[in-house]
Length: 217
Image (tube, rainbow, N blue to C red):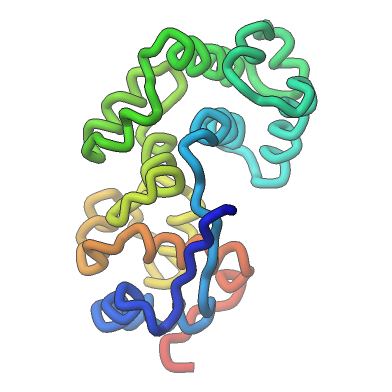
């Protein structure tokens, strides 16, 4: 049975965030309770491949290409099968040559034991980022997505992520999205930056950012 994680106004973490940031509190009230399925470490490989494919693409286009890859693998996306595919095979599903090479690099790292996903569970955030970014095609953004959505680390601030920054600009009514500015403004979210970020992602998913943000309306 998959583990379902739910947060609502009775959650201590939500109450903490609402006290610390009134703008975030308004977003939380607009979004309402959130639930999501906890990822298994067995899903870590496919998660990384998905994130590489989706970089710089819309969610819709990224999903379409990822689904093609799963189909190419006969429904079993795993390193052993991806290893047998060529860069041209991967380009044939609509991904770029650079991303195809990244997929092959991740696959090689897993098969050769350079990346052991269960070992990452016991590393500090900085160590996980350093380990993952050694692989061609994995940058800080992808590593942070892994920390946030696979390892469930509670205090990840994805200030490199375009989707996060879109909601951030909307909520704070600012165009200053420099790392320094975002980190300073979101310092008050600690130690629950990941949960706050999930609410900003949901605000975007729900289309809330299409309307002007009003704190007291």
